[in-house]
Length: 327
Image 1: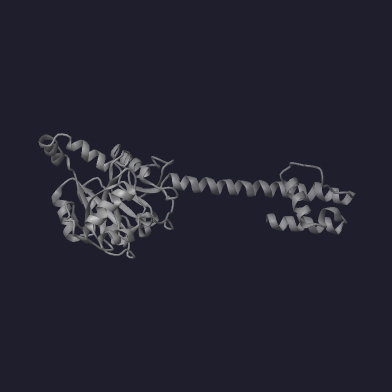
Image 2 (image 1 turned 180 degrees about the vertical axis):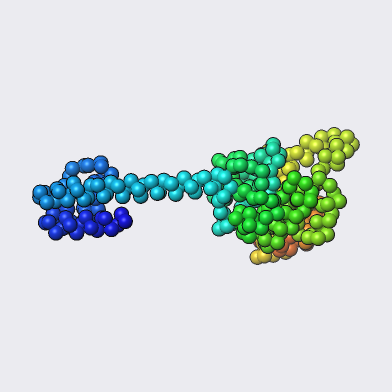
């Protein structure tokens, strides 16, 4: 309608001889928009009586009415998009390499989301929260939100972009809900690492048998208390290693497919010398060894665990240097 009125205005003004307005397309569009917005610069205006009548009875009323309607539609569309995202109705299916958190627990989940936000690198997409008990996004400045009727909802996971997510963290209201949601998340996110938190080890063991690729986590409070009693300061060490908001945090890096094989000893000394980090172990096919022999061969696809103040970028590590040190 707006385009049709603009063309019609050009035609009738051109018919009555307003060539100063219609000769140049840019000038006419400029005149039309200035008229529609009632700004009225005054540098372009009809010169003939017929042109002025057309401006008064056709261009002005039509342009102002249509411009107001278009502006209202645009503002309404933007508002609806914001409202849908705020109330968990957004769609993030095109998002990739992001983290998804499933389930909401007051305090606990907020802390979890804040830690994940601290881990986000520059340019990484926001975290997506999937929950069923929230009216609106609890942290709109840091995360996006998908609202579902049940946690193990495939549609909700699809809207959250589970297919291309980097990791999915699951913690339901109960172990049964966590178990169901973790299985659905693993099925939809074929290349996504799924982590599920359980209150009871027995349920975690069931999931490990059913789907070994899913990493299960249970409370370590009893183990930490025992270690703190027998080895004073152990709880402080554990807190440092697990907290991304502090120095001396435990990180991991996967050896790329293009990297040559090298010994654990070469990685230990070279990482310390070139990157000032401490290698503490490795994992192969999910089997973690935190006390490796020096002669252990590290291959592409293995995961190295190290302690550092910041995460290392795999591309910045000189993997060829490790192989030379091993020779």
